[in-house]
Length: 216
Image 1 (tube, helix red, strand yellow):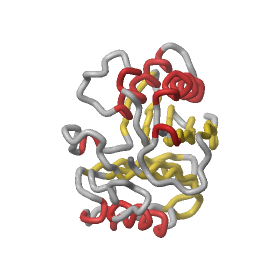
Image 2 (cartoon, one colour):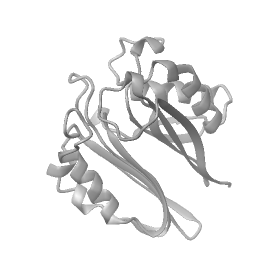
Image 3 (cartoon, helix red, strand yellow):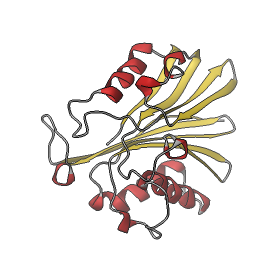
């Protein structure tokens, strides 16, 4: 399983949070793999006045071995984004193309998605596609948006469809269309399907939160 950070701050992104991801990528006592060395990525939308800028970077290197990770320093009037360190579930799905956050465009939206957990691939219409389950989730969300669903409703519909065959759907969806920006955070954990250590966690919890939405 992976580890991720979703954030919405003003002024400056706390480097202590970023460094915490670096540390857990090298050693994570709650992970059966003890680390998350299979790449990392970050996306941040940065507002300065009325203008938005984007920072998007993915790497196949472990965060703890990548000098670019230590160069992360983001400031602005408002900062919205996702950072992720990865432990691959399938070793043939390695490389920068499989690092999160993933990016797709749908009906004018830029969609960025990062996920922690696993989904039984039989939940997808094309389970043999050479993509991670996380990418297939975003692909489904994108298709629902093309059908007319809002990002939030598409996220919820996909979540409800696959939750019964998922160990965890802890994830974040960042979207942007013009000056419309939103971050949706999903917390889902099913202890019956998990293979990692837990601390005081109930059998499962499910929460879908629209953290914020800034209209045009």
